[in-house]
Every structure is written in C-alpha cells, then in structure tokens.
Image 1 (cartoon, rainbow, N blue to C red):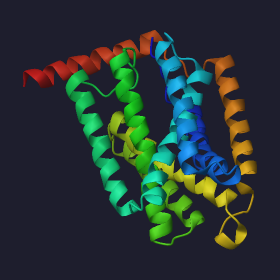
Image 2 (cartoon, rainbow, N blue to C red):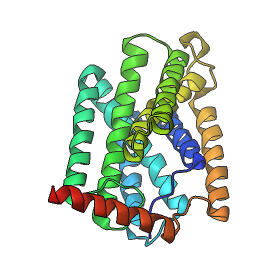
Image 3 (tube, rainbow, N blue to C red):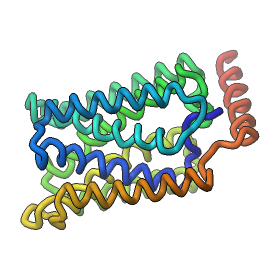
Length: 265
C-alpha cells in the first residue's frame, strides 16, 4: 500500500495550512511561551522523531498520523533554518543555496537507488526515508528562501505572499499547459508552498506596524490547526486521498518500465 496521500486539491490545502502553522507555532513556542530557540528545537525534534517512527511502523496511509508528521517536520524544518540564521548568524543568502544543494543530492540519491521519484509508490522503508528527507529539506529551503526574499529584499509579507502564489501559478501553468512532468511539478510546488504558507502566517500574526494583520502567533496557530483538523477529519471519513491499487500499479509499472529502458540505453 502507498503510505502517503494522493495529491489532490485537499492535499495542497492542508500542505499550505501545515506550513503556515510551521512558521507561527515555532514562533509561538520560542517567543510567546518563552522556550527559546534551542529548547523549542529539542522539544519539536523529539516529537517529530516519535511521530516519524510511528509513521514508519504503520503499514498504510493514516491521515492523522501522516499530517501530524508533516506539521512537525514543518516546525522542525523552520527551526533548523532559524537556528542557523538567528542562533549562529548564518545569512539566508548562504543557507538557501546550501539547502537547495542538499535537496538536489537527496533527489539524486533517491533516483539512483530507486530509479523513480514517484510519490505514488512509497511502500518500502527506503523510499519512505527518501520521501521524508526530501520533505525536511524542502521546509528548510522554503523557510530560508522565503525569509531571504521578504526580509533581505524588504518586500514585506503581503508582497511575498503574492510572489510565491504567482510562482506556484507558473508551476501549475507549466504542468497543465506545457506538459511539465508531474514529479518535477510536484516538488517545485512543494518547495514553493513552504514560503507561501510562512508568508501567510507572518502576514496574519505579525503586528500591524510591522506590516501584518496583528492576530498574534497564538490566534493564527489555533485558526490554522483547526482548519487542518477539519480537513484531515474529512479525509479520514471520505478517504478521498487514498491511492487505489489499480491506479498506481499501472503508473508504477510504466515508471519502472521507463526506468528499465533508460537503464539499457
């Protein structure tokens, strides 16, 4: 069984909500609750590894478990970047290319080992490990890239939201209009939804004099966690995003045949 959800509109909705929570909840814990960056990172890191362990142990896709892991990896990925930038003074202009390279290496290794980057056939622990590692780096990269744009270029949160939404629209157009491959489209959109969600979170939570709506990290986190809960409950009941065996088998057979063909060339 495929252990990750099918990519539907619901998937992207929850993904953006998760990334927004990643930004605001990390801020909430470290600033509002006063845990500080280091303690927040340790607490969230532990929580993330516990849930990731449970996700690996389950035999099928379980919506609440999968999405809780995504929320935690989102917070953890954000904290990795924040620690480097705020804790160690590494500028985002340095961390952004570093995470981009790490992500590229992850994809390269994944492809060399598995001969496919399909997310419809995540059924072995090894594939799942590549999948989550790639996701971790997309969050760290998205955080660094988003911060670099909105802070270093001084664009402000709302402008950043529009820029990343526009970039995602371009990916969608390239996918449907120019037949850009589904795997490339998926991961490009996955990287871009991170800064989009973070910018939305910052825009809603930051004070008005700082260019935000001034809702605060607590209210923003609660709103988005509530929305995630509602959507995940809906998906658990309807099973709208469960990969049907027939669908992905045809696709994985095609992908594997294609990989074989490439291999022989």
